[in-house]
Length: 239
Image 1 (cartoon, helix red, strand yellow):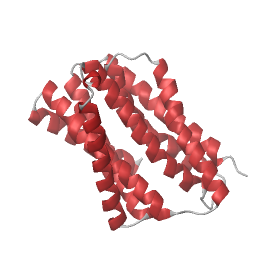
Image 2 (cartoon, one colour):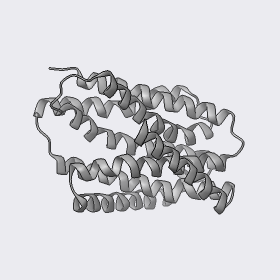
Image 3 (tube, rainbow, N blue to C red):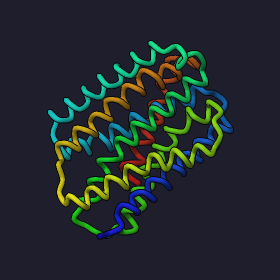
Image 4 (spheres, rainbow, N blue to C red):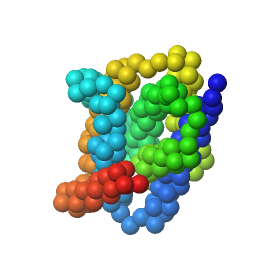
């Protein structure tokens, strides 16, 4: 048995942690909360468009992607309905940011499980240095996206370690399961990844972008988001 699960766990942990550290540094020198949220909007939409959507379609097809995306939108709306019925969850801006960060952590973790399964069922039992670097780089922007609202809320940095472990664990678990079953159910993983895409998209459009607009303006938020979107595309395509 290979140690693909350990490599996947460590790569995800290091990448998410590095992104969290960068988010902490950016937050420490921030001049505008609206700017940070606009950057996060562009990074998330870029990550979805240039990496996760092609991944889901490659594993399945357009029909599976559409059904999974729709399920993700419905899941988000159901969670939102539950949150609105509980006023204790929305009574302060700090709690709003914490809720957003933890929700993103949950969604990224769900997305990481099928990724781990695909890694575990790969025909290649050993990872090259190039692939290890790719796994780390993939998780750096996710870490920045995840920890930005948490740091804005004033949460201490020790949470960086705990959430990094929480997000990396599904990769290890998925890889272990992938190694044991020895085969892939591509349509199922495509559906799960598409579901996370739909949920992440709704979090971005309904939670993060409106917060940026409230802190700045429509034109400014869209402009900064477009720049971040383009930079994410260059990052994922050429690096």
